[in-house]
Amino acid sequence: FGDRDSPDLAPERRDVPLGAGTSQDVAAALEGLADGPLSNLVPTLPQSVHVRHVFIDASGTVTVDFSPEILSGLSGGGLSRELLAIRSMARTLEVNFETLKKFQLLVDGQPVPTLAGHVDTSKPLVLSEWD
Image (cartoon, rainbow, N blue to C red; front, side, top):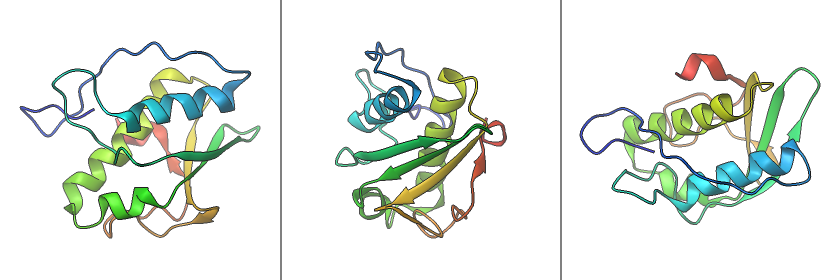
């Protein structure tokens, strides 16, 4: 989540029930991020966002298909908001799922060139580059 006193991210511990496998766990972690913080931190994703599907390939690339609310909820938010959203998703994945290396965003099953007009999301993002 976002830190109210700086442009950085701040962690918030969550107990997310484990699913039947890593794909379900990734979906639960990202849905938890979209649910917003439990403390005084700043939400990084629109609350209306839902994870539609998660696929993980053998190379460690996770493809996450989001509902279209991720685009409408971030539009007009500027570069800072888009960066915070992407960084929060990347950090959530990298910290909690060691085998994941890259993150591909889809919206309604299709790659999107950008979430809010600033960052290229048409190709998988390397998680370690979003610290």
